[in-house]
Image 1 (cartoon, rainbow, N blue to C red):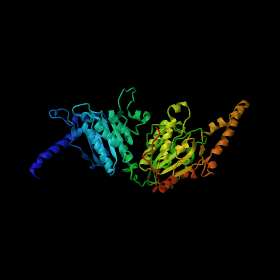
Image 2 (cartoon, one colour):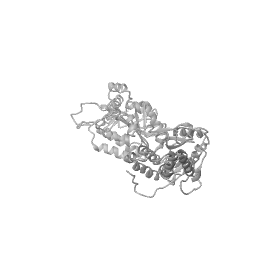
Image 3 (cartoon, rainbow, N blue to C red):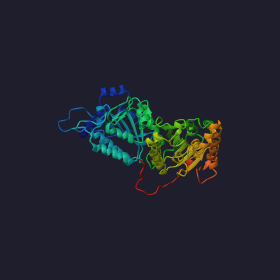
Length: 516
């Protein structure tokens, strides 16, 4: 090697040393005292050993001649590159809080924008790790204008549904940059250190926290107790999703018998419909090895969504939960359901709906919250799904929920019902009061109200039973088969295998227009 190269290599070595040190030892120590890992430590935990290849390492904050003094900006506060996670190619960027508190500069925002474009072009997932005080406010040097941020956000949106996008908020993330994690397919927050806030006055103690965005705003999908746990969650999500919209999730051998029948399913549902049960118990019994990866667990818990495997095949589960608000489809649960099924459809992941719900709630309170508008999004969304769809109805399927949850001619590939299923335009109890109010009024006078009420109720419940409707295969409420609850798992497995080569097309159009 010629001596002329020595000087160039010395400069390169110096750059790499600066990058490895981040904002300096004191800043690294502070980061650790705050309970946070550094940007590079996070990437090391997320990715397979030795696979991270950094891009944009020589980038620094741009300075005009004469302004070279000031705070150093290794990699301009953004560590990024290509890597592998469990042998799968990804691209990753991590904001470095040790460099100017992670505040994003002009060159840093362009680095991320370019990486997003590259990930879209190479058709690989992109993972962003946020720990940033927001935008730099140095108007001469590091100010972030709308130009670079606009490019970043536009490409991030354009590649929605093309490549999976995962965001981790492990420190602060404020200002315009706060929009990026929320635009992601999945948002993971550290319960102790994560803080997401657009701006403006903070009026509550939990504002911006992981708890706030999980339980109140519904913008957080998973909450972790540490950086390590959050990064492991990102790895686990990747196991259920493909590289891009043209591929399928990897099938894994789980060792669980596809024909396994569960006697316990016969005892979960209470005999009296006034009593509830937890749908998680059903899900745990039918998925491979009882392993269910739930999303948004504490937001609108009356709707359960998450990933599982059936005979090694990945599927998304959306299930009403009678144990929470009787499994009603109110605005929050409708939004949760809509976003999840849109993701599944974008990446051709099968949808399993499990239904036991009294439908959309009536009344002034819910109407003011836009229950019709939110429910309409579900109707519109499900109507456009082309991924494999399997519907399982367990007990109550009343009103609009019958349509929203993939029954009654909405295009599911297979519909199965337990013999306990009831289909009705609304709850039988309401119909008894509406239709037989005169008889009930007289019975109240005569002192035999309960007997008369139960007489009419039992007649209606018999008429609404799937064992009655099932006799009419192509009209009213239709199921492909009434099944023994113990067959639920095997029926789903066979349905998923049957739909492996499914092809369904929508009418040709420029785009659809979803209700507001």
